[in-house]
Image 1 (tube, one colour):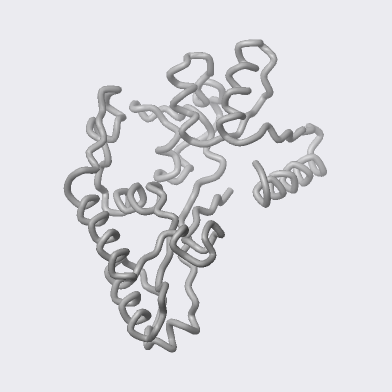
Image 2 (cartoon, rainbow, N blue to C red; image 1 turned 90 degrees about the vertical axis):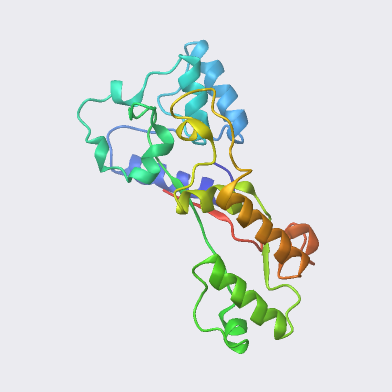
Length: 227
């Protein structure tokens, strides 16, 4: 992994090697897509590493390729039910067989300026979009030109909302029940939510990163990887 995440991985490897008779050599292989390509190539060449770490979507690619051995067929002395169900679901088959090992899972973090919230008469951090909407209006009325900003990434503004409310974003049980699944985000809660975001943007309550003075700097609610 790159940047600060890579430093965390390096620290974990050093800590493991300091207390174990086994030695782990951690090697950065580029971004997720590049690492995935290298992983497939190394497996086909019969010269692959013992363990590879990349994004959860890569699990599906390896499942369909037939070139990787499912995790549950590799180890028989592990209680896989110990994993948090929400995290485990990313890495298992439709028959609930764990295909790869959950190592880190992402969560969204909302950053707020508590001082400015208090000046606008807002007590506490908004915990729902309804509360966020009310807070944004109060901030705007108190003179703020940019109450809230986001990069608008579907993972943040669509997938996480659907997951939190238990709404599928695709047919066939979000694709678990068949490869003929189709996206179903053009109906129901997701449409209502996206329309809200559009309306709030038009009202100046929500601004996308390019619309802000900071432009592409990370002032939005990012995803944070938690090992």
